[in-house]
Length: 174
Image (cartoon, rainbow, N blue to C red; front, side):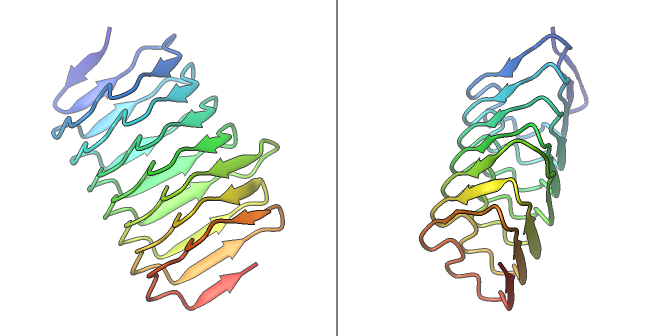
């Protein structure tokens, strides 16, 4: 049973996945406590949760579905633990307030899907650790504030137009 109070949700321990569209368009949702038992965040699970400001994805989550946090316009920071092996297409598309994306390094390979961080207008820099094997098409496109990108040695594929219309981009280290 979910515990809900003043826009805050606590998902009970034992839940293994957050299904597709679980919190779809919950505009007043401010925060979510996800237990370490969760292994998968479904497609569009938090789509357009406009008041969500931060999310802690626990170690143990393996998959972040397509559009999982799309249009979470107040989301400011996210940490991707080393257990995540796939970030789906459009996962953080249109998170205009997103300033901090931390992707933990570790032994698990990571694939980042098409448009995963497109239109994240407040994102200034990104470091992709060596476990990132592939970034999809237009993955960081239209990020007008993005200035600095560091791509570590494990990266094997950079999708087309990965940094399209990143008008402030002045430093890429490969």
